[in-house]
Length: 305
Image 1 (cartoon, one colour):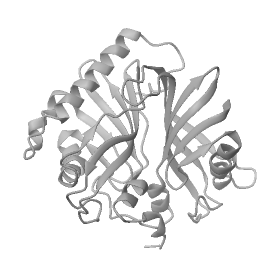
Image 2: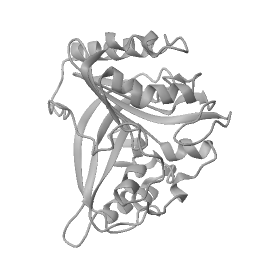
Image 3: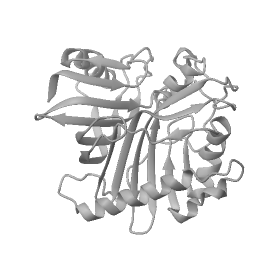
Image 4: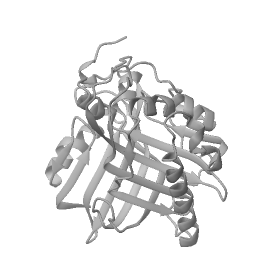
């Protein structure tokens, strides 16, 4: 399934891999080994599976992409990238984007939530999440596995809904979060599933309280949308950028005082829409890589507590 010269862009601390053998030995095999014990092997549980074409208008990446998110599940029994196992069942949340060319994967962008895996082992490397810390569920209507053809017209409307919300984000007046008018776009029962360190929020008020307020305090000049892949299928849209967001760290964030440094963020998003609303949003951010830019190596904070 992998091209000989596949370009593999992954979470810190793995980062950049090149070629099939490197991917097998430094990504696929370590995950498989970490969550397998005896006859019990790692499970790959999918919540969203979708595909589409992207024209590469922002940062290249033209071609057919497939995007997947879900969890690896198993007995965490072998160290993974320096994280010590606890020998009990654990989940590793993942997000993946694959560009397929000539019938093989030519490029991959992958994030896993290592901060959450550490939390499950009793090691806290970031302050308690402002939002809820939970095993992130899949779509509430169980519609995320799109193995069958979807209506292109619905996909176009889904993307239009999400892009309208993007434009609203940049109406922020710098003071009042309500200036973005997010109630125009999000369901009253919306769920926003962020990475561990940020957490999960419900409703626009929860989204603002558990994510937006702290984020905009820390990065008021943020600029986003630098997407390597952006695709919609049916009621879902997905995007990723490497980086997706550029900003200046001018306020405290996740326990780190403002540094004044320019930063970038590796981000992945999946949105589920209904005819009138954005209902759910799954978000992964490579927080260990972000905090390295702010002078903090969170993966070195591997003490129980």
